[in-house]
Length: 526
Image (tube, rainbow, N blue to C red):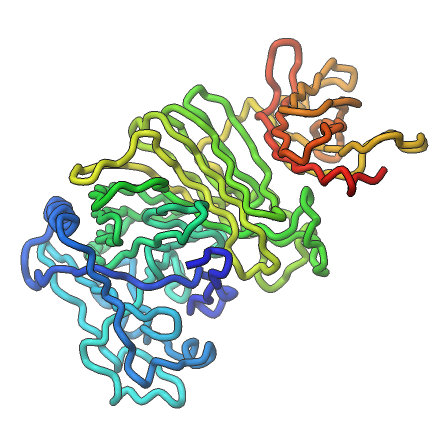
């Protein structure tokens, strides 16, 4: 499967939300056990996943009934789960679950079980629990058809989703804005390598019945793919931010070159720092505008995203990272001017390891895109120690979805905007090619500094020459603007840039990172 052609699908969400998007992926594979009416626990699921990994992989790809095989997009959208048949409706629970129908791009059935008092019962497919559009005869659908995925609603507004699982191991959630945006996955395999990426699937779910007055929901999932199996436990706690505590036990079938732990998938087409595809009437188009990192050594890093001309894969080496995430920092409607999908409301997503992850890389994959309906940004943790086949590998981490960073650094200013353009001094002839970078910071202690404070912009470049460095107050943001020019060398090799503001020996800001790819010599006009 070519990631650059993954179509982001519209989930059938509440009418108060714009259509969310999900990459075009194959649905779940693997085999779930027949444990109807049998005791269930996460330890049992771990043992089942381990046993499954010892067997050859079996795809569950199957043909759909003729009534579903050639649905149009409009036909599929017309199939809607009936809210009066939602799971947990009428038992006093503050949560309800609804299911997605098979069809269109979702062609593999996913098995579902309800866990009540430690006992799992299957949730059978019921055609009469859906509203079907014209042209779809429910009499032609088999009784054991199955579902494609599910979503959970909360008592705050039963019309709108809190979380949705649909397609491979993809899922997404909302914070207080109740706005979908980027996605997470159970696992990524061989992302960004020069061959087809492998997409593991959640093949079965066990939904624990929440008690009356419960504040969270627990979901268990079985993951399966040609290379690996896994047992997942997800504890979902909605609120101002949606918090997910995830425990994953992984069992490789074979060696995996690039495994991605806690993968995040987003979209970046156009922004303040990258106008390469600025052919749209909207100034900016993105679900996320940067990668934030909190290293094991305590350094805060910010890397603005770009829509590159060619595939870019960046590695940020670390030991026991404290967290990383794809963030949507820009919350100004005027910067997007989109009153249909409201990019300024898109949630950020932060990954927080719950135990030491050792040595590895946060990997950022940026893929060229011409269209906002394609996810082209991926970030994940890649451990340096390979996951060995035949062994169990356990990971615990937390995902936080929403507009609010769960661990801000109030003492440090953060990057608010990155802009680039031609370098040189206005009014003076340019004698060589250079690129200007203007980076705005606000927050921390910047608003308290006097105008004549000796704030320095500390800039470094991996190649080329840096000149015209400055830092001055920017009262519109109660912050500072740092500016510098980069004069690249005669190659077109990427240049790694680093910048932060300093007062004496004290860092005032996070560290801004950027990768700039100079044009070929023949295209360097000045």
